[in-house]
Image 1 (cartoon, rainbow, N blue to C red):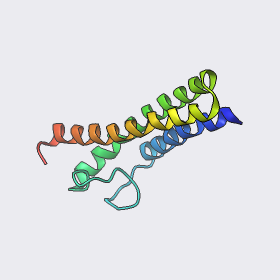
Image 2: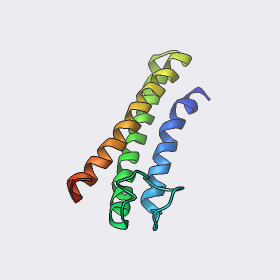
Image 3: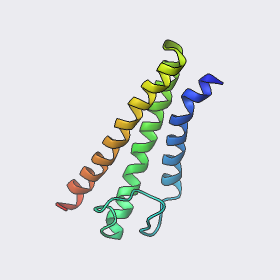
Amino acid sequence: MMLFLHLLPGLLVLLIGLLIKTRPPKQINWFYGFRTHYSMRNLENWHEANRYYAKVLIGIGFVSALAGWLLFLFLIFPVSILVLVGLMLPLFMVSIVITNEHLKRKYGKW
């Protein structure tokens, strides 16, 4: 059960990434997809942002699941979960920045 709790965050992120990759949002919306000012500027940006972000989320999911497994093996329970959360939050922040930077490189300035 404890191992499952350590793997769950990474697996959820992985599943969300796979969902966006296999069923990307077709239209710009406020509910589903990578939603930033730059990604919602036009449909071309929207599709590219979601395509790229799905790959990023899949990578974060794998890294987080692996980290969860390693933390489960080497740290005690409450500390291991705190470390996992402390790892995942910066990964999410960086994922938003690198996806926006990808859009900026591909389509130019904001």
